Image 1 (cartoon, rainbow, N blue to C red):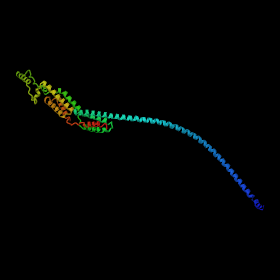
Image 2 (tube, helix red, strand yellow; image 1 turned 60 degrees about the vertical axis):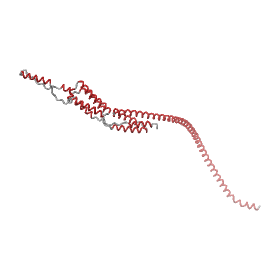
Image 3 (spheres, rainbow, N blue to C red; image 1 turned 90 degrees about the vertical axis):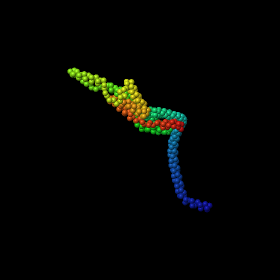
Image 4 (cartoon, helix red, strand yellow; image 1 turned 135 degrees about the vertical axis):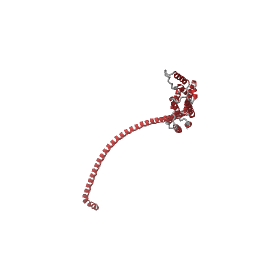
Amino acid sequence: MSETQTVDTPSVPRKKPLNLALLLSIAALGLTGWQLYSTQQELQTVRQELAGRLAEGNGAAKELRGMTEQALTAARATDAKLAVLDARVSESAGQYATLNGMYQELTKNRSDWLLSEVEHTLSIASQQLQLAGNVPAAISALDMVDARLSKFDRPQLIGVKKAVATDLEKLKALPYLDTVGLTVKLDRLMLSADNLPLVVDAHHLQDQPGKKAAAPTNAPIWERLLSDISKSLGELVHIRRMDKPEALLLSPEQSFFLRENLKMRLLDARLALIQRDGVTYEADIAAAQNYAQRYFDNDAAATRQWLATLIELKSAPLSVTLPDLNASLKAVRDAQGNKGE
């Protein structure tokens, strides 16, 4: 019992600290409760905000879901369109391959036709050049071939283009010969040959020497008799110097054949002109000039003009070596042989 009293005796003076501790505990509890209440209020506010945001997120999710479904629908439609496009592309590729094959075949055929056409044109131009000496026609033909080839850009035509251009330059370098103009002048000479006065015609038509005046009627008889005798002798005998007596001995038939021979010489000269045969041309012109100077009246104006035209024709440049078109023809035939390469 003495021990119990010893323990209980010091507890009496500790009531005041206990009360203070209790007050502090109550205050701490109240502060804790207030903090709990405040935290609950904040949590409530956060819950409300979170609920609102969740609601907004649900709406956005629904909207996004709808947009996603629309995008999926559009993607499916696009996939279908792409499938159709793929099919069309495949079909177009097949058609393109077919068309390309047809184009290659057509191009090949066009090249064959072109080479055949060029060869035919060059053959005709070569014949005209060698047989007729028709340089302008050959130049025109080669110009046409050159323009035709310029529209095609194919490797096998390069050699043909070069050969044609070279032959064309050679032809254009030749001296110009107006074949048409010279032919027209020869035709005019042939037509006017029938009207050239012969020496024998000029002799017959030449005016007789001036007649002596008749003696007056009141002259003596012997004077009038002498005048009549001299007049009669003058009509019977006419003395004239003639350097070309054979020209006065031509009969009408010989005169006709002379004119025909003259025209035949001019015709031969015309043929030689067309054929570019300079030797024959010069020989025929010289023979025609000899006929005119020997048998025709050179004092007549028509004959002098006729001879002047003939001498002008004599100076035509026919003695020119014409080139051939063998190089162009060989190039075309080589291209035809290599057309399959």
